Length: 488
Image 1: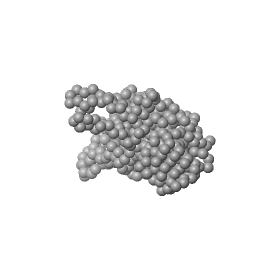
Image 2: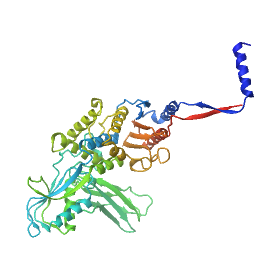
Image 3: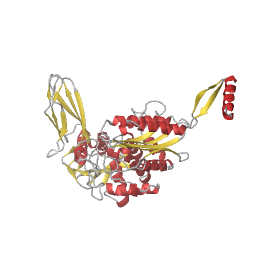
Image 4: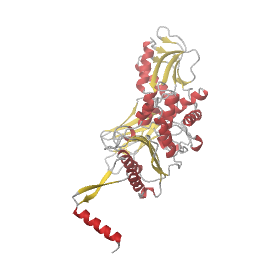
């Protein structure tokens, strides 16, 4: 027997005679994390699809994971990360979006002989109730009748009402609303069909003369029904909604549509608010520009923080597009345009150290198919934002919180990601992204970006992949060890 074999045999004999004790064999947590993520990406979901992922520690800059992170991908609504950050930085955290009412003559005995003007400055969150407040503010000025017209002034933005690369068949989709400086109710209307045993009752919310509903749907007791269709007409009657098909007794169906000419929608609702406030308007709703020298008599303000929170939490597209055009006014003045807004966003990114020649930005919301970013660029951006103490708290808190709110309310609902991971989703047909921040079990802040695209199966499959990876990051600890066995 050779010498080394004798030594090995003696060693094993001595171990067998020793006292029992636990042997702790350290495991490299980072190696295990990478192995776990690789095993998730080995799923057949990614045979036709593409995944791009990067994870970096914000404490030391170490790259924890990288998979094809320099590939340019469609970011979907991850574009809102860039738009919201630029708006907070350029417009400032104290900025307020304004809607104002002006008059071009002085009222006499409650009668305004001239016109009344409502001018929008890009507030994407104006509601019917806000118009009611403006109407009552005018009533408190002593005005009881307006002999002129209601002039709707949307001149703060240019006339491009849609983003570059938006698809024509999304035209009435509430997620692709017309972009306008004078917007209300997200430039959308909600229609509900209620039925009893004999009748179909169509309701619109808000109730307004601006929209016409033509109900051609019918009631039936048959179990095989003609599918119900609710659509907004495209030609000639742009804000007419038609219902067709069959409904069962005692049912309720609700659908939401975007509307054309949102400035007229706002003006019509304001005219109706005036009526409720006891102000009679003899004229019509007409588009125009507020004359220089007109007197401002009422206004409504919307804080930028509230707008940014709504933009990112629920992924509101109108908020992003309006913010982009307002940014455009800081470059070359009024009217604000998406083109100028993009220049402002690119300059903001350049100041953060990001090479904008290696990405493509064409809108503010991510609706367009022309946007291209990489996971590496998004991580670089999010890392730079972490180092902006003036705006980072608002930016960070605007992101959906896993298991709690926004587009992540129903995702990652359990420990350790729930109430921890904050990230922006990005979803289009065949596109799913998730980028943001998460604290590990050790309290180490990580920044990550997961971009997946080119799939035709359900997006839920890719959400689940992202959620599993998010849970791994939240549960990661650099101090992990395992019990390998025991000695005797």
